[in-house]
Amino acid sequence: MPARSVLNGPDQLAIEADAVRLFTHPAVQAAVEAKRAAFEAHPLAQTPAGRTTLPLNLEEMAFSAVVSVVAMDVGRSTPFWTLNLPHERDGLRIPGTRHGVDNPDNVYRVIAVDDVSSFRIDGQINDRPGADVSFTLFNAYPGSGVDSESQGVLVLDQLDRDADGRFSFTVGPDAAGDRANHLQAWPGAARLIFVRDSLQDWGAETPVSLGVTRTAGPEVATRNEDQLVAEALEAVGASIDYWLRLMPQWFAAPFNDIAKGRAKNFSYTQQATSEARFRLAPDEALVVTIDPCGARYLGVQLADPWGASIDYGAHTSSLNQHQAHRSADGTITYVVSLSDPGVHNWLDPAGLEQGAMLHRWQGLPDGGFDSERSVRASRVVKLNALASALPADMRWVTPAERRQHLSHRAAGLARRLD
Image 1 (cartoon, rainbow, N blue to C red):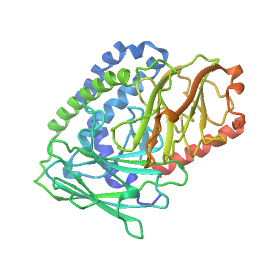
Image 2 (image 1 turned 30 degrees about the horizontal axis):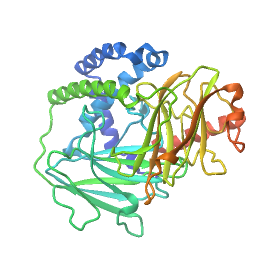
Image 3 (image 1 turned 90 degrees about the vertical axis):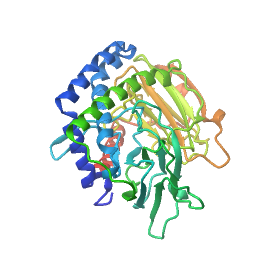
């Protein structure tokens, strides 16, 4: 990781500190607490997993909403790293911002833009970039109360860059014309650039460094404390209502039914996803076989019933095609179970008997995405019959090897905070 990575630069720390200060305002805390009843009345709260993870999700959904108020300011536009685990900065606790089945492989950054200003985003590739790096113009901050729709996307591999890995692109109301490195901000439909570095090798791949310059636009008024508090109150209510409504709709398929992947236009035009829910007894295992289908990036992630990723620093709650063991035919078979079955490709739900799961295929091949091939098979089996349900060449691990995998995982994650 570069010594002056924008993931942990002064702008990042300043926005985090401002967001914590706003979040702890008595009026904002009262609004957060008032939303507890909506959580407690929700059907998900009637399950053991839902009850256990309710406090975490109330805090993180609310704090993410407050972060959006602070970070979405074109007057201080900067790449801001969000959708994070809780962490500390010089003794200051920063709550998590997880929601929507966030991907542990992704470094998510947001850059505030609007439809009347012009911006230049300058970047630098550091060492090895992620398997897939994209810059998407969104009409709405994810979780702000309305669906975020892509208004245009640029992919790192398609951007013009020099021999040293430097690149830039522009965002503004003017048409792109013949410029490959430009995103047009359509009237009323430009809110932010959503940056996603998808890292498959956490120990070796590094997010690109980014900087932002607002090159033209009207003067931006500075918001006072009362305005920030009012916006935070509105954002908290809209975001929590949105996620409580969306999660049961988005993950409505029967438990343990893994649908075929399908392409969709959310945050990226070359992505396919498969949403599912798991529910398992202590003596059961869900066995799923997926096909990379030529995608540059493939990963599967577990989340709690509300949509917050399971602590991926402490648990192997996600796997991508670099981390997973592949069978001889190129497919990946993984196992979800409450206890460690000794399989290399184990997804650990951290004791939750049910939750959400999401498969992502990104950087799809030019020939298109083969939906029928994407999910080869899935079934629930008893743990004592698991071996017979797995490929003959499945890799098994000892408890010591599992501890080593977790240590390696934690070290790779720590690179993002160094």
